[in-house]
Length: 325
Image (tube, rainbow, N blue to C red; front, side, top):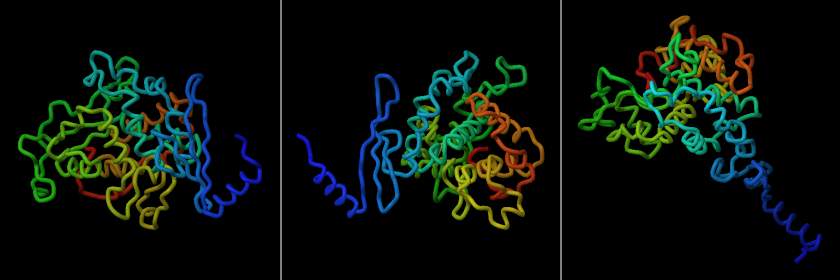
């Protein structure tokens, strides 16, 4: 049944007067599949929903999603040695786990902020932290030291249980639980497991082992850490990387600039930053540059050294235990 042009126009005017226009666009993603993008204009602003991967009507969901830009073969290129016999987490990490976890945060802008270049750079930046923190690569390793990310999913031979009794009222250590490093950006200490678990609605305080048993949860915890400020009034790693953070005068005096270097400050504090030209910092930077090359972006897009590094930065939170150290 055909609808008259006048009736169509009247329906359109009614939608506009309600302050909202909705339309669905079918976008082909392969020869035999397609995805539906639902677009709304609400109070003059365009918001979109792309189903499971970017759900909930967000302006960020109007951009390409991570799976549009970063696919299985690229994940395999970045982490090519993770399933070799000498790796410590063979069969654990995979692309599906990453993209499933990332889908939760794409409506918030993770991997969906800006245009294609910024999106690719953020994916590379986040995964550079992951690769550096889970690597078992070394100087003469097959494929080079940067090819061994996601070799681990937990700390090998921990020297302590990482139980801090000063948090016994908020995050008391569970009997028999060990809070050693686990995950894509490893979590340490009872209070960090407790805080992450609260936000993910998973009982990690009593069951920290869940992180080493579920790759999607491990990636989800790491992305949550990336997009969430450590303290109120401070930026997240995501915000300083994509340019959503404006440094204060104090930040400028502390040599904290928007860009990759400050993501290390937020995630690791003085364990990596403000220590001069140290290996811990350079390894993370090298992973970022290497991943940009492998993803076809090119390391020249990484920016100058003062943006990449944090060797002279004053930590946001001095003398505090990082959740990722």
